[in-house]
Length: 187
Figure: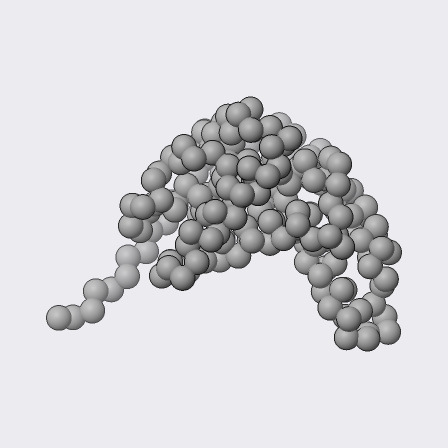
């Protein structure tokens, strides 16, 4: 039997579509709030762990790596994400604490599509946090390997978290009132 060629699916979500997903996130945020931190992190970890060892499409593997990075950002004792910064990340991850999935995960091929969209939306929202955390981890590795130009952890953390907050404020001002479209899975 001849091997079947893969199918490429490409679609665009306009501002109304994105608003639907944002409304689902707001609904989960109202249900859980950021005070239920353990449930939020557990929900995100459950998605990441449920798929471990499974053969997943590459687009989903890439997004799960980003989700794992978001979880690591919350769990990292050296990074010490606290206060409003922590709440910001928890708010972005709240969707994963809600067992009411838009598309049941067990449906082959498309079951994780809603999760992929929500991970992308969270990653876009958390771009300053993800970039700062990645730099912090790189600095920590350099420090551990004895690099002379690596900053002490507390200095690197303070500098990077301050930059992260500035970038978030700028992005909020820039994006206020602007509608957007979103393309998922474009190569």
